[in-house]
Length: 173
Length: 226
Image 1 (tube, rainbow over the protein chains, first blue to last red):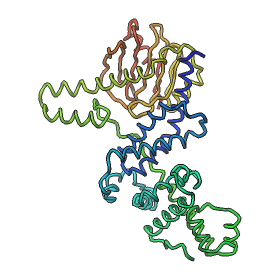
Image 2 (tube, one colour; image 1 turned 180 degrees about the vertical axis):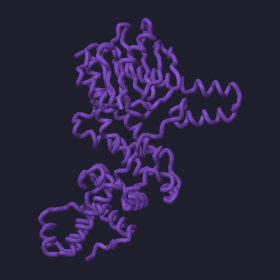
Image 3 (cartoon, rainbow over the protein chains, first blue to last red; image 1 turned 180 degrees about the horizontal axis):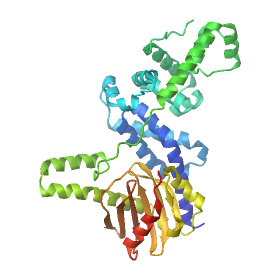
Image 4 (cartoon, each protein chain N blue to C red; image 1 turned 120 degrees about the vertical axis):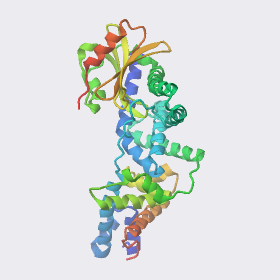
């Protein structure tokens, strides 16, 4: 195999990874940014950064966590550069109404709005746990937190969602 | 035994928790067991809610440039010169320039691809084309490179085909619609971008004899599928 063919294989592997993981990465970025345009830009830039450092990914079974870390960093960079004004959640919901809509089940739509209203500290670990399937230990590692702190955030996230949906939020029996 | 409060804090953070202490508490406390069941049902709803459908952005209007800054620039230009010949020229030439720049930029970013020589197996080619339901007839020439590349924020098939006239890069741009074919002649590359049944296709090479005929042959060999 000459160098160009080796490069071909590398590109093919990267393309396959991107294609399979991009939908969830885009969803993750969207739930964090709550803005479709920002999410798309962040994921696109992340893919470019990932391509440049693809050689550093020695174990492709860890590609999802690797790409997620890049997306998280890119989100942080984006908001460092452009500090968003205090978010008007109702305006965000109106702006993203197409993605939030779930005409087939209004409970899903209610839940989407409720998640949109969660503070980012609670929203992020919840998305990582439920959408991306990470354990609390893995979330703690990625977020640089103690596992106990992640458990607390997840507990509070669900309690707030229950409250928003009119269910008893109390943990006590 | 785990206390109710501890149990509820545990399953409130991880409704799927099923370690021995949790199972034991569930067995002895129906109220807490119901609480965990409720949370599991809520998690199923959360999961459905999180799986938003974020399809590709609506297709750009014909001849619109790709990114927001160019859109803004074009909008400003159009508002300033609306109705004038200059405006018309800008509107018509911007997307072509945009596509040409992006195509050449992509090829230059991946210079080694044009030097590939080993023909890919049909399976390797199918791996790249299948996601879009596209096919390429083998008589067009050996495909020596095939990948799904990020182009203009989308994943597109990128092939190198060894035609009798020389190797050409083929980019299948399903998301870029154009109304008529145009030529590219930039930075030592020559090519043709043609309207296709699904978006457009760019066929680019270097020093290709009878480029238009080669491009037409490649175009004819593509089955765009569904």
